Length: 246
Image (cartoon, rainbow, N blue to C red; front, top):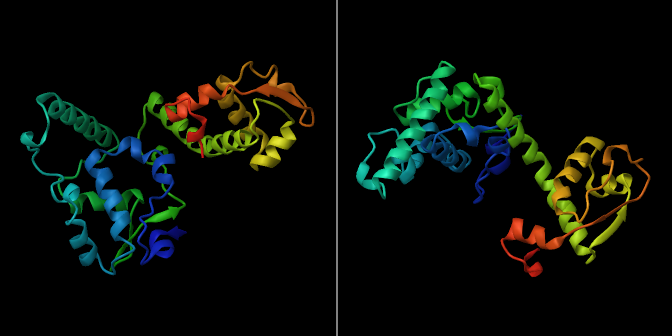
């Protein structure tokens, strides 16, 4: 197992495990639980004992005032206060469905993190796993729509870096129309057949015309496709200025 303390001790950079996003935690944890986890990622590699870590945690404003009675005056409006309360209640119901009580203190929250495998209790100190990282779908009772949404998040997290690499590589060629085979694309992106097809599907809205019968084209046959760069600039940069792509 790879952990944050092994990877990042005495480093100024705060490492957040990729699994926090890809395995669904950013979607199911409340704001204050999420703030606490990110704070733990910061303090765990920098201190040697739980006492030191706990003291450093309480220096974070977002942790210091968490799990306490909500102060209405801290919210910009009545509407934002009510919205926060509603979201918090949803998180509480979600945990209750799986047999967990929502924590009322930082200590209780860390105990939950340990139960879920987000935090490793090493007796005298805490650590956080990087790989493998616990998966929400294996720990909680999910409705079908929740399971589908989390599966989509995981797929998007896997596809996005490859899609970005494809777009940047094509953009460097300073062309619009390309002739490439699946084999060439797989070699360029270092992916398998399944991932390539997912990436090409994601590329389709940005093509002048879809690639016809994409699944049936032999791996060594050239495919011709034309990228409409303006669509990519607008969707990913909010601008039509191609100089914004690095």
